[in-house]
Amino acid sequence: MRKELAPYAEMVEFLGEALGKEYEVVLHDLTNPECSIVAIANGELSGRSIGGPVTDFALKILKAGTLEKKPYVANYHGKNSDGHVYLASSKFIFDAQRKPIGILCINHNITPYLEVRRFLTDSVIRDREMHPELAGLESRNTAAIYENFQGNVSEVIRTLIDKALENVAKAPDRLSLQEKMSVMEELNENGLFLLKGSIPAIARKLGVSEPTVYRYLSKVKKGQGPRQ
Image 1 (cartoon, rainbow, N blue to C red):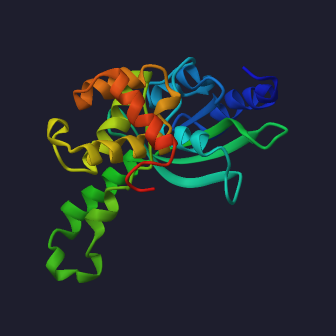
Image 2 (image 1 turned 180 degrees about the vertical axis):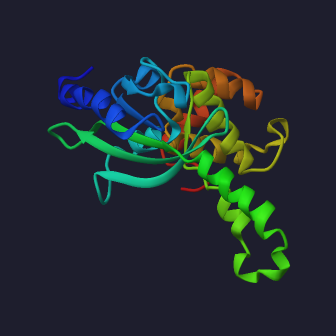
């Protein structure tokens, strides 16, 4: 763990106890994305522990290298592998050159509250046609997910690849060269290739060789992708 993160590591256990068992507090060292979790409190909420990987959200920030506005992002939604939804907030930690080197995250498990709201809608209100003011309530119950909490690197890699392939809406073996390049461009922007093991994983998914993936990636980095 970088020395700049030590003061934040001391805060993790304190915040975990002060906020309560429904709040997970996590400190990530972004200089080691495969094993970025260096301190965690109430990790049983997401099933993560020390030595766990960086999230897809953090990878995208790490790839960008800078934050345009504030040094934190508050009150967005995350999800763990069991489908539990969290209200998440992340404070970024910088080195002397203003490069992000760590993230202090607080994740509040709001799944019980969403279930209560769904129960009240289904059991008490019942007839939605009689209550037009409640139109769209179900869609609001289903939170838009901006971050996924996973316990190992292979899950992070799989999630990023699956998300990119969803956007082209085709089976991997039916993608054209341009569509494969578009997938590669999105994965590069989202920081996938900062993780060890990402090249063989995307090669298997696209049904191409690893040298072919490196060739695609080289073109993307040179600005020769379909969106550039």
